[in-house]
Length: 212
Image 1 (cartoon, rainbow, N blue to C red):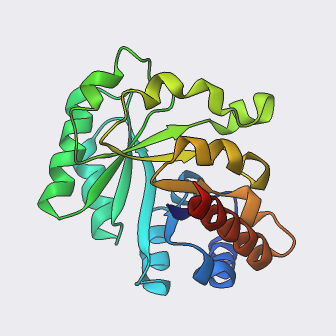
Image 2: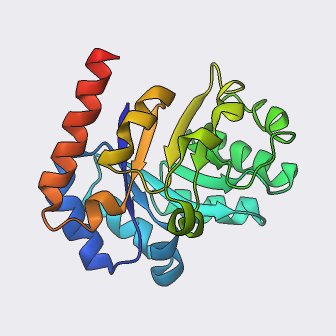
């Protein structure tokens, strides 16, 4: 299980400082959608320059214009980019084709994907799939793993991640789902002691893994 640090709703200097604080506790760095929207692909370039040895995820949330957006983020240094599962199939396929050309990967965000659409997406075995509780939904309902079982039955043999307000309190639910990647944002980035928060989460994940 890998920890992906989601960097959102902060300045670039803050993003770099937070990552420096928790560098040894996390595995992947996510350039959040808000950073990309506010600072452009330079946000990807800067984080890759600062942390060249970490896998970098650009949360592009691509819905259209796939070839162009893939080119932008991969040339800026992203190792993985995100595409929305609800996008037209040609858009998702183009993202995967463009990634393959560059020996990169695509994470397909399943936010708002209906279960009837899932089988066609799961044909893309090379993709990483992200089960995602949106920020707006988190604010209303919090994190609830009970919404995911219908997807998990279909996810066998696929690489997948989970995101959406994950904290120490929800790790028991996350552990039961056994994702490949746990995406954590505010539980680390908004903590008073970020290094301590990241260390505690990492220790909890590994403890659960050893007993799971």
